[in-house]
Amino acid sequence: MTNKTRHHALELHHVTKRHGSGDTAVTALDQVSLSIPPGTFTAVMGPSGSGKSTLLHCAAGLDRPDSGSVTLDGHDLTDLDETALTRLRRERMGFVFQSFNLVPTLTVAQNVALPLEFAGRRADTRQVRGLLTRLGLGDRTGHRPAELSGGQQQRVAIARALLSQPAIVFADEPTGALDTQSAREVLGILREAVSVSGQTIVMVTHDPVAASYADAVVFFADGRIADSLTRPDAAAVAARMASLGGGAR
Ligand SMILES: Nc1ncnc2c1ncn2[C@@H]1O[C@H](COP(=O)(O)OP(=O)(O)OP(=O)(O)O)[C@@H](O)[C@H]1O
Ligand SMILES: [Mg+2]
Image (cartoon, rainbow, N blue to C red; front, side):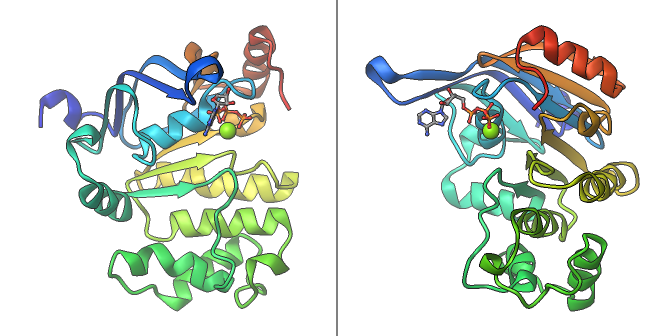
């Protein structure tokens, strides 16, 4: 481990990722370099199709870049085989998928406890219930995902990613399906994870108000970092978004 990597929770170095091949090939990430210090909250914004989800998937080792390197929590992901990568993900990382990815046959509480159990640890039932209650789902712990609204499913996905207090949490539009009040609650929990527990959060969002909870905003356009802001306020974020042509959704 070099000094440099020890000081970053996440480091991308000239990461390029193409999807598809031939005439339909799309360069989703084009030589992206990015360093994120531990204990910080970063928002990733940009128009639809600009590469935000691809960035999160490559950063979390769910997808392999075509070139460049990703260093997560001091580990160069290109050096890791699938087993080591899986272990790193289970022990150090939480991921909130844009499409939630809940297990349909499991209850809400079982879904939330699943990553911990995969990591060979026991989930504390009271802790699971407490987290779900904070997210407004205390009376839904025994339901299956299909019995929940989209916004409720999204909050289950958030609880699942946060339960083990992982060092780094990737969240892909975690408030995309939520009403203002639930979104505020979720953003407060994410902010607290950073400010109180020292976790690192990287969150994709289209919402300038959500981005204003972060310490910094990185703006993507056409697979490249187009701009960034530190200590963002919602108005400044909205103005930058507008100038990138994506607007706020
Ligand atoms: N599996 C795939 N196969 C082919 N092309 C893909 C695939 N996944 C993403 N792409 C393309 O790569 C580009 C970046 O996609 P990505 O999902 O990263 O965008 P995004 O910024 O997350 O968009 P959104 O805000 O709509 O979620 C898009 O042009 C998309 O069509
Ligand atoms: Mg996306």
